[in-house]
Length: 332
Image (cartoon, rainbow, N blue to C red; front, side, top):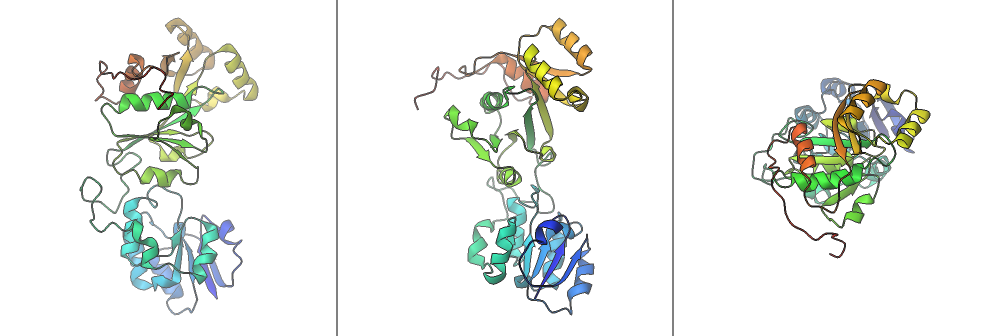
């Protein structure tokens, strides 16, 4: 018989077709779980990691490994960048925790087919360093604002406001001075740029893909319909300020600009003058962070994008730098 300890994923775990002798729900100190189950016989414990207070701190998971036979624990991970980081997963393996997954369908499989070290060895960092040979700090995840990594999300507010193409161009500009990764969520438009460095991911795997870029200094994310604003340091909201696009936006949602209050609004593919922008801000009761005109995506370098990036705080950029390339870049 099995035990389920749940919190965030209670509903998901309740659908498991397994024999359960005991199930508890909530957020618990490790010491509470030890008291509850030390003398309690069970086959496997399916443990929702969010049920452990302070689970982000790997030392709390270490307490768990000291007090339980970890071969009997199946750890259901959440989708946070910290838990899915290479450093965190490596420490799980170091503590003998081999049965971990983010897939609810894999839980039942692990009950009868537990992992061995061989199955998780790829997560184990034996050197204790990142790819630049810097020591890895395991208590926190060097992402979402710490460790020098900056994650910038982009959202189209008006339909087809140009997030995908803008990210492609910004990546090219940033690469002059930064190690940059671009991710696209639940879409495949990046493939049309003939650039294999542009990566596509799913909403479920977004945090995992962010965490597994240890050398990145900047990650640009085309969020599309993803709700993971929390993984980004900041989110840019793109508006194409054409009359038809704006009218469609307001007709679909009368409170669209109220929802954008205090957000970073950028006008893209814009033909507005400074006077027009002032009128736009007054009528929409909003503040425009930056105005990007129509630009040629075939050009390698556009000074206005350097200005935009410097306004965002990417101060290393040299606005005079440019590289020549083929005009269309279609035949590669």
